[in-house]
Amino acid sequence: MTPSQRPTDIARDVLDIEGAALARLRDEMPESFDIVADLLLNVPGRVIVSGMGKSGHIAAKIAATMASTGTPAQYVHPGEASHGDMGMITSADAVILISNSGETRELADIIGHTRRFAIPMIAITKNPDSTLGRQADHVLPLPDAPEACAIGMAPTTSTTCTLALGDALAVALMRLRGFDKDSYLAYHPGGTLGAQLLLVSAVMHKGDELPVVAEDTPMGEALVEMTHKSFGVAAVVADGRLTGVITDGDLRRNMDGLMTRTAGEVATRSPLVTAPDTLLVEALGVMNANKRTVLLVTDADNHLVGLVHIHDALRAGVA
Image 1 (cartoon, rainbow, N blue to C red):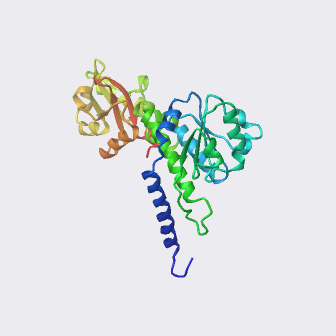
Image 2: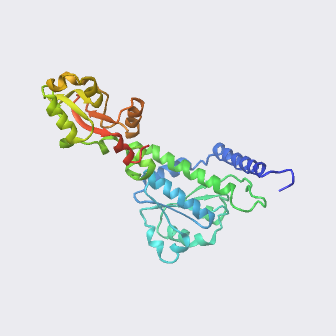
Image 3: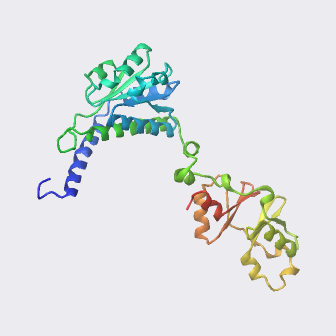
């Protein structure tokens, strides 16, 4: 670093170098990309991704991204493969091998295994004329761009481009498979991502848990139902269809002569509702915007099918 360079100046230089390489990768998209995508889309087994060193870290991330977006994939360490794990790679699979130079010695055994058993092999390398490139069935070449490190040797630009190419391949496969939000939730049941995609139907209370009264239910009985079910509301239904809701606010507004009235006389008509297939995070937004703690859940015919409380959303990790 020269006296005139701040760390932020160096950082901008790195991003400029890597950004330029990514732009080249976009503009010089490998001609074989479509063929490779079609091959991986139709492979009966898994996509095996491997590489050594920094390329190995990128390979593991690519495999993880594919696996989480609908493409069965697995990272195999080339050293472990040479010492017993080669059996993880079957004739039903396709293999992606990553090596910037294309001459990584540790990949030799996997290369030989794919050739022996006619397993499709894709190379990601800067050098298509390398040993790896010549042996591969298909090559996805990286741009011949300089590394961003001070000595031009540490994997920086090359790993960034490899990761971006892997992301592009994973997303292309994801879209070709029609992998949607519901599919994504199935692969991400835990954590914040899963919580953001949960549907109301996954957490709503239903059946005997619901506080339900009829239009002609005396308010004394309605109060018992509200207290027993502990949601602070009672749904008023007729022939299974929701006609109103009784809340604590309705009780306060009707204190004068409350016990002489029926549920239908006290209920608020046209209450806020949500559908079972609404995202839980959207239902929470409706509750927050309207200062409610409960939403009743109805189907397309206005039948009461459930109830979701704000605490259900919080327990599920939606906040």
